[in-house]
Image (tube, rainbow, N blue to C red; front, side, top):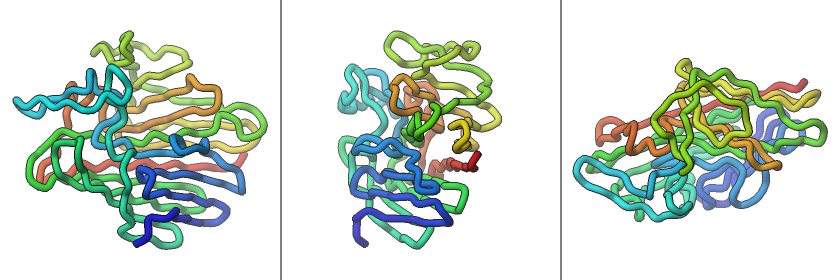
Amino acid sequence: MSNDEITLTAGDAEVALVPGSGGRVRSLRVGGVELLRQGERYGCFPMVPWCGRIRDGKFRNGATLHQMPLNSPPHAIHGTARDGAWRVARTGRNEAVLTYDLVEPWPYPGRVTQIAALTEDSLTLTMSVEAYDSSFPAQIGWHPWFNRNLGQDDARVDFTPGWQEERGADHLPTGNRISPLPGPWDDCFGMPDGVHVTLSWPGQLELTVASREEWVVVYDEQPEAVCVEPQTGPPDGLNTRPRLVTPIEPLEATTTWTWRTL
């Protein structure tokens, strides 16, 4: 199938997916209003086979040490799939299925599948990672850039995390869990009952980011956007909390964004 931009529609909601640009959601418009920051680095991109930063770009799989390219020196950040071209497996009016084969510099063969399903008031993204031959640690996450302002007041961020991962000077968790601190944030939080973060643009729209996973990174240090990133583990999780993908046990995660007008 073609890798041109895919448009999904449901009611007054419209989603644009760009398989050839990292399988990202380029646009989400509700009632004609764009919710995602625009630009080739923005929208919402899948983070896979890891999320956030890997310390010094290094991770182990058993006794084998691997080095990833330092695309955010001195670390490697946000996986490799966002830099690749995904393929379209299936598309319809309100659903699309994209796939990506893991290739160099990732050292293990495997396949990533992402499903985007749109309704009148929600977008659900489901992603899975399958191993072909060798088992390997992996993470799944999404990195949406929500516009801070939709034309009136700035968005408010509301969530009640169980803890915050203490952030070191190198922007990686120290291993200590602390009481949540006020923003601005570039921080990972634990939500043991599942991710549930609400963005409210007063008088306009409320959007909730939800996931069964218990980890979320919130990044709001830029004036243009707010990022709410559900993921299957914390930054540097390939080293600190590895989730092993095997030929018989894939890794899967889902996030749903639900919105309502105010």
